[in-house]
Amino acid sequence: MTGVPGGDRTSWRELGSRRPLATPPLEADIAGNLQSSWTYAEEFVPEDEVLTTARSKGGELGCVPVLPGAGAALAALAAAAGAKAVVEIGTGAGVGSIYLLRGMRPDGVLTTIDVEPEHHRAARETYAEAGIASNRVRLISGRALDVLPRLTDGAYDLVFCDADKKEYAGYLEQALRLLRPGGTVVFDNALWHDRVADPTERDEDTTAIRELGRAVREDERLVSAMLAAGDGLLVAVTRP
Image 1: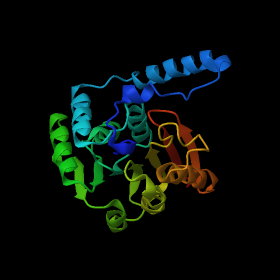
Image 2: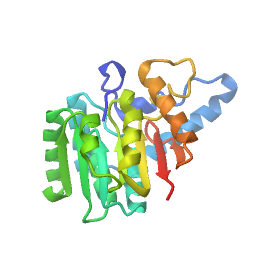
Image 3: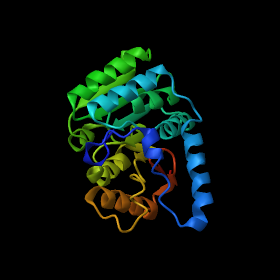
Image 4: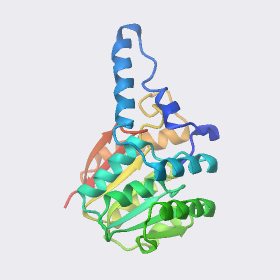
């Protein structure tokens, strides 16, 4: 759960208006079709009142929740894995949490980490509004790279990362330790507002995400894919 650069509380619709990047005239039709397809995909699974309310809370807190298309993909990934134990890095107001919980098994437990106590207060409200039993969520306050080493090796089915982009490499290292064989790690903002694909963009966050993608792609322990859902999801499954 993270804000866009400069603290901009850009909505997902506003973000979508910046996709794809400006293109030459001959490619304008293709660009228009891509924009229409992206918007259609984002709205394919409608969000209910619980999610729209949580999304609004996230904006008030100065963070941008996972976008709808990426959230739907998260739920599908959790369901496909039959996930019972999931770690979320970056709770925010609980938008990502709800998507994960709705895809997980009914007896599944989500461990969600955030450095901001006010985020957890908002997330608890979201869980209550969604009717999520309190024993299905374990909230841990603290910096993720301080908390993750305390979690059990090989005990989790999925790790979702949506916090400090500069720490993504550290999250990957911890996720590979935490996941069972065949487990899945997912990184949000993997396209980072279309900056990752542009080699002229070299700010610290963009560079960190670009290097993460290269590391995941080249790691023979992983089967990976880049999904153009939301602001991009980098998905990697550990080989058995």
